[in-house]
Amino acid sequence: MAAHYEATSKVYMIWPIAFLQDLTDYLIWNKKMKKVGILCFMFIMMQTPCFARDFIVEFVNENYQETQASFSDHPIIYHSIQVRTQAGPKLLVLKGDNSNYRKLLREYIAENKAFIAKVPEDENELFIASKAFEIDVSNLHPLNLSKYNAGEEKTKNGINQLFLKKLQSRGADKKNSEKQPLKKEDTIQAQKSNELKKEENVIKSKQLMEQKKQIQALKQQQEAEELKQQQGLEEQKKNQQALLAQQRAEDEKRRRDEFDRRWQELKKRLIEDDTLRKLSQEARDIEIERRWLELKARYQL
Image (cartoon, rainbow, N blue to C red; front, side, top):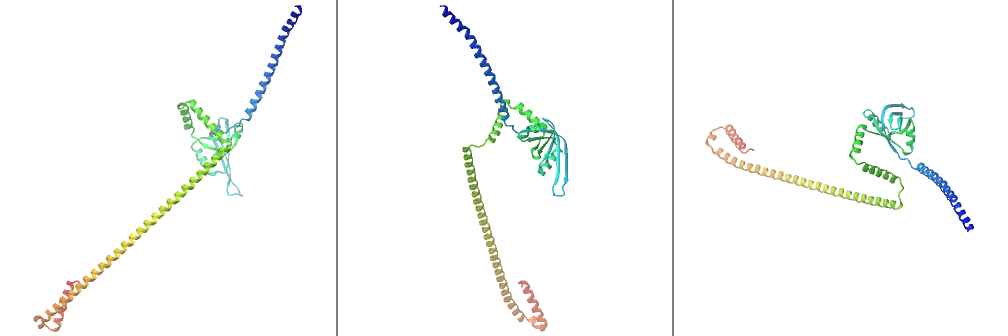
């Protein structure tokens, strides 16, 4: 009995010591896991890509200088603008050879004083940290700040914030999906759609060519019909002119025959007239000629 009591008392004395040891090991392991988790989280955050940002900048001052180089027809341009940004005051040094866009941008500066600067995704931190930042001139886009702020305020007041967040998340998802490489199935599908578009374009071009040919054939047919009608009208006009000429000739001949017949009758009467016989030969000739002219004028000969 004494031996059993002694063994039982030893067991009850060992159990609290073992429990404390297990608890200590668990706490030490838990601290290590916390450190590992923190390190993993920091590593993931460091690997997360930094997307491009659009910075609204307000114009302060412009610096522009052109220098004609002796070895080139194009001038050397120094162009910079001082701006206020969300990241503090900056000096934007405008690079690039787009002279037309630079000219339009300078014309805009004379009227409006705000832009949106599209900073490349790998230069966001550099833009925020720099005082002077080189940027391509085509990455500056004019902005009417007052209307933009009014539209932004109206959007916030008129659209449900939850819906607005959904739209923003859709835009971010779309941007991420554009950056992700296409799968093989998507590539095949894109190739098929491109081939279908090409076939549709070929069919449309053939249809357009056929329509052009039909229009050209109709035009030629109309021109031929108009030419035929014009030739018919000219032929008809010629026939009418010939008929009129023939009628005039026949009228002329008829008048001439009638004139000759009447003259022979008049001449016969004049010869038999006793009054003319009493006249001299010269007087008779004059009277006969007078009567002949009167008769000719009557028949319009």
